[in-house]
Image 1 (cartoon, protein in one colour):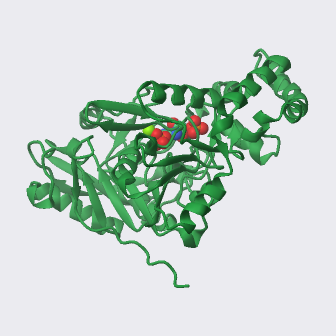
Image 2 (cartoon, protein in one colour; image 1 turned 45 degrees about the vertical axis):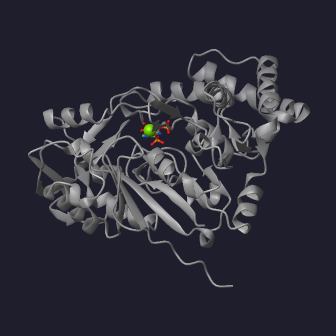
Image 3 (cartoon, helix red, strand yellow; image 1 turned 60 degrees about the vertical axis):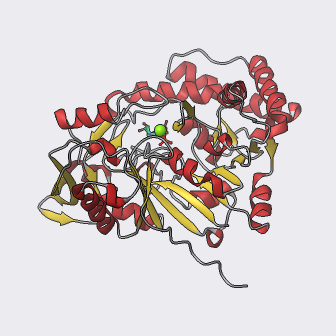
Length: 434
Ligand code: IMO
Ligand code: MG
């Protein structure tokens, strides 16, 4: 059974939850490797809709061990609420494992995220204000609190006694906000630790043991390639590495243990938050797509910005993730459009550009060069094979495959698991001999 990485090829919200859902039957473990409760994954199972922020979507299957890897930043309050919500809906959550090494999003991280954004005003990143950036910053600064620290009263007290006064100084002096009380914070954090104790584990050991047993594992990325801290359009990015390589640092797998990388994309583009978006649609066409596609953020409820598909960052994302196959989502949302545009190159200062310039200033000046495709009429939600698609829809998918340069194996024509076309087999790398 393969170890597969699922990665978003755009700015997040590509439908990674549905991809996990489809592949879950074949695996024993699903591992989240980065991000935190900035993510929002929607999974539709019959009449039931599950919205998950931290627990991997695999939790909805009794045979799967859901794992939150070391690369994730965990807001314990969110996690406890989510476990409670799932248990309340009849899902067994005792199987959920959280890395002892995952960093904790503390209340001061959330406060600082909001305060920094407010201070940046017009230059704000448009974060989800969940404390993601400050938590990862403290991790790199080596002043973070890890999940295992929540089980160690003396150690936690030592660390917070050192850290909290500095955080309070910044909150009060720089941002004019209230600080946090040390004793209260220690008590709250130890309470989280007690509640989550049964879930904490050495998740890298769990992953490696599962690989050794030959079990299938799915590594589930949050956000998307263009929001990657290193490969996205900095500074309009998140603070972790959604790219497939993040599964290695944040999930406990080595590069040569990965058998396939499944890139997930929508048939058009969306983005929440600030930052350049060359193919953004400001007119009625965009609003129509946004409405039909219900493009509102799961976490913040913000309307998502909508645009035509951009093959320039798509090619780039296929390369930096070494994508082996693609799942194309929400093709049904484009039904009824007279014409569909796809950006195939940019013009920047008079030059034709085909390699995505991740530089935000360059992107802001990029003028899309479009290729035009005829649209199709009527609903395609009932199609279960390419042959059942209108010719124009099938041709659009063929064109995207050509532009991506890797096979499009799955095409989604509706939110439900069954509303999927298995277009081709997924190429899976042969395990190295020996
Ligand atoms: P899923 O997993 C879309 C965006 C925010 C902002 C930037 C930084 O559902 O695809 P952050 O709070 O991470 O510091 O914000 O990243 N962002 C997302 N956009 N989908 C997501 O997650 C996102 N998570 C963060 O809007 O632009
Ligand atoms: Mg989302």
